Amino acid sequence: MTLGVFIWPASSANAANASLSTSTVDIAAGENGTWTISGNDSGNQREFRWSLPSGLNISTGSSSNLNRFRVRSDRGYLQVESDGRGSFSGTVNVSSSSSGTYTMQNTRAEISMNPRDVTVNVGGGGSTTPPPTDPPPPSGGGTGSGTADYTFYIDNGLVNITASPDTGNGATTISVWGYGDVAGANTTFPGPAIEAVEGTTFTIEVVNNLNQNHNFVIEGVTSDTTAIPPGGSRIYTINAPAAGIYSYGDTLANGVNQAAGLFGAMIVRPSAGSTRAWSNAPSANQERLWVINDVDKPNWLDRTLAGNSVNTANYRPNYFFMNGMNGFQAMGDAATNVEGNVGELFLVRIVNAGQFDQSLHWHGNHFRVISRNGNRLNAFEWQDTINVKAGSTAMVLYQIVQPGHFPMHVHTAQMETGNGVYLNGTAAMIIGH
Image 1 (cartoon, rainbow, N blue to C red):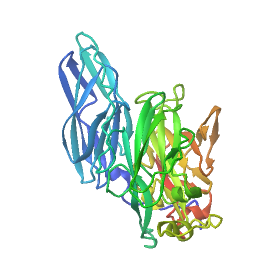
Image 2 (image 1 turned 90 degrees about the horizontal axis):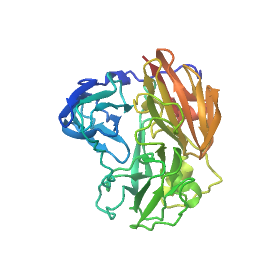
Image 3 (image 1 turned 90 degrees about the vertical axis):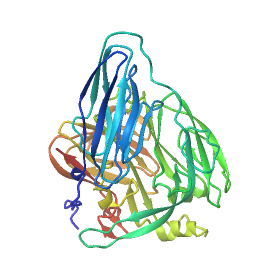
Image 4 (image 1 turned 60 degrees about the vertical axis):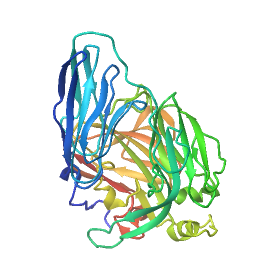
């Protein structure tokens, strides 16, 4: 097997497209203006975000084929998420009572977009009206108190693994456990990402809809390991720590529950809408979150879900995932791939939620390691490979310096496979325009 040769899906992220109606909105103080986003998501849900400048009032208007279209003032961004039905559109309303220039900076675009940012020029005068600061409504669901900022439901889930396009082998569906943010719906793998601003306080309610005890712990942040009984729930008050990347999961059963799918990531920002890893770190043009993990299906996963005992000394993973996807899926996923224009700087936050270390090797350019397991590096390290220890986190800065398609893969051949099928393991693409 030649590790330097890769095949990526024919349906690349370029098949999807999005654009803004304008890059500049000119209005008078007290008047309303609008801009729109429209495009085609090629049948996959796509998410976009813009920062919320202080002093600019922003609300959502009419929309078509959007799953989420809302202002998240507590987290400092406008969220737009298509629903995977092809064409979509949404109108954004802007106004301000104070004259000045306000820039809504794009902080996440899961497909190429031009223009990316919107500048609102407000003429006239008056007092500044800050954006609202109320917490977001809790996630929906038929259980739970409905009083927390986040509500997670522990339940059964499914992971679909696609076949290798060159051999047609490897397609299967794996049953897992997971955290979800909608009651009764299939859970996500990994769990939903949590976002917060350092120094703020928020609440998470975790509802256990399985018939075993489970819990919820944010590594290095919370210490409450109390079991949540079947059908029970527990509310956690979280004081957001220093800006960085953190993991969460179920710590019961000596890691077996987490390995079965109960894990996820928490991003803490230095300020609302910031694209910096911390307050004085370099500002990135785009961000990516990579959650990697491994699964021993016969010895751990299948036995756990069947209610049988697990010999934790016998762990031989046969599946390896990037953001819950096998290699060919991840290499065609715009939210996972590092894709942008030459010169753009990416902040990539990495969580290894698995049992094995993984050495991630990047092509196209070297990158700078800026944080290892929560420890900020005074001197950034130039590398082309980073070993992310099991249960640890890292943050890197990667700049696109040339056009083309380049792989990101693992320097362990087994981890590039899914149950022996290549390239169905940990992999992603780096795409420069």
